[in-house]
Amino acid sequence: MIGAFYRFIQGNRKHSKRMKKLDQWSQFHKQLMDWSNEITDPSVKVDFINECVSKLVLTSGNSIGDRFDKDMLDDWDIDESKKNICDKWGKHIPSLLQEMRDNKLNQIL
Image 1: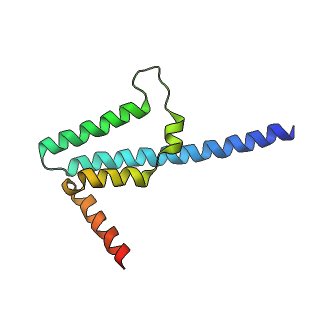
Image 2: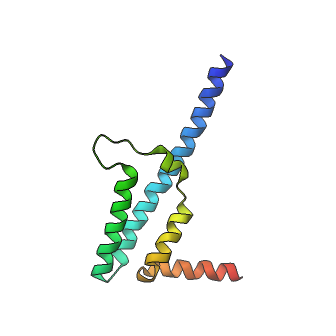
Image 3: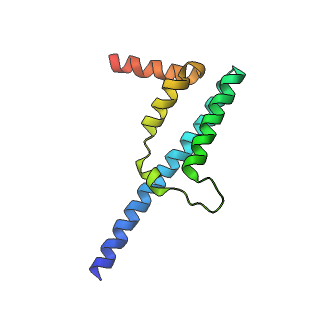
């Protein structure tokens, strides 16, 4: 009985952590859509959207019957994903460029 209760508590905590990560993941992808609207160069915009969509398809399953990869969600790091976007696309996204400048300034101070 105690073991079942312990497994229930453990499962509940793990589920809560995953739901929090899923919410962050969802918010990050909404931010990606906002950033795509800021890109003025049409060819860069298309490349950015294509890359975002291809990563989304790879991580969320590529056919209707596939389930979302829970391990990917556990391993996903918003800061690392944002850094990758900054490194590759930052110079084309004005708000992201400003945020990068602010972060560098805060690190200096």
